[in-house]
Amino acid sequence: MITFRKIALLLLLIVVVAGCSPKSTPVPQSTEPAVNPSPELTAYPIPETNIESNAYPFQTGQETPVPAYLVPGFITNTPDASLVSIIVSEVQHEEDMESIYIKNISSSTQDISSYMIYSPKLDTRKILPSNLILEPGESFVLYNGANLEKYPEEQRWLDAPVLTAALDEVWLTNSAARIIYYFIYYPSITP
Image 1: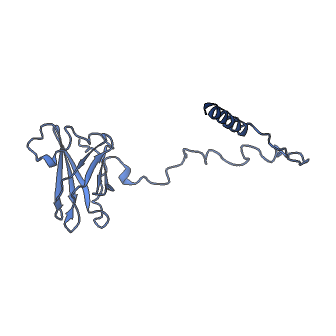
Image 2: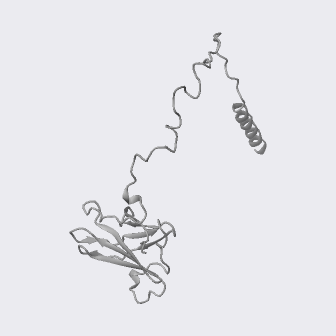
Image 3: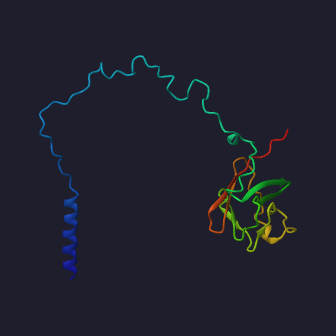
């Protein structure tokens, strides 16, 4: 039985190797010589064309204005409540504590039970408590930092602030784990 297996394995190996051997490519039977374009027809750079005006970076002024929301320190308007009703509306830093405000901006009561806030930088999340209902205009606050014992357990997240540098971000997801709001932090610039 062992010899049969060895012979079968050897036969299989020969078939695989034979199938992988290089095969010659058939040569076309055309006798026409290959036509190379003449140097006069394909001159480079193209005569009478100003290459610098087409090259990046453009030497002229910027034709497309930068949207204001891409400028650091820009404060966005409140999002449209018909598109998203729950947002991260504000982040406050006081000494070593950070407060993240999750707000209902719609005109109706919103159930945010089991919503989640996630930090991709730290790869950590906080699942919001069940039976969490926000009235119109009401906010739920999460706290990050040291010495959070005075705040309810369901409102504590991390022992250090998560949004400390420009472009730090948190994602707010619904109970189905779909991102409903993407918050990018821009620190206040105060003189």
